[in-house]
Image 1 (cartoon, helix red, strand yellow):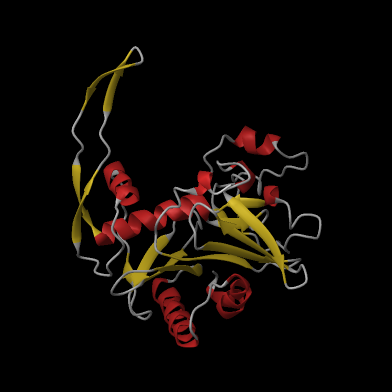
Image 2: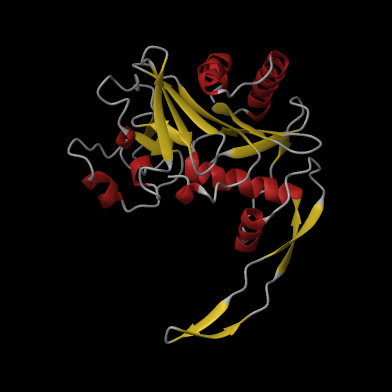
Length: 281
């Protein structure tokens, strides 16, 4: 959620029950403006809130030159003081984060132990041996950073044309973007994942007859597995606002105003993946 239209964006998300209290709005908006100025970011965004037992985690991110590669994430437990989230690289930390059974506590320094899945040695389609599950020591601050990254990679959304790829490779907000029109706003192929593309460029460009290299380099959400079940789209306020919800990460919600450059996403949830999705249809 862009801090430039923070309150207006939250009002759009109230249609699906996602909201913050007036006091939280004021604290977060003012503190993010200060964070924007102190770090000299080009853009500042409120990412969302992860519910914990003692203290909820509020997440925000900003960027300097590239809004995909240069993002820096921050967290706060009081909506006023923001700490930099660590950068997690270990695959085992990500695996332990997804498998962690306990909810977040609200203490960044807390350490827990998570048992990973066993590994199987397979030769000629036969299981030769099974290794004992490895136990990983997981710090809650690392777990928080990992779950924010995973949720962003799998469910953060932007409309087609909102991001523009420069000739030098940098990705910036498109100042010429004026929003999706009546014929586009209800089509999932006009919404893209707000992350670096994983599909080959030829694959993304081949999906469209009106492709534009500068805006069609991102992956679209209509190709996310499970197909037709990963996201749901509804129109609100007399068909003027598109609301898209993630069915994989319950709590991730995106909005876009018809014929307007205003759009954004906010996650308000407990950080748990919906593994029951395939059994809900």
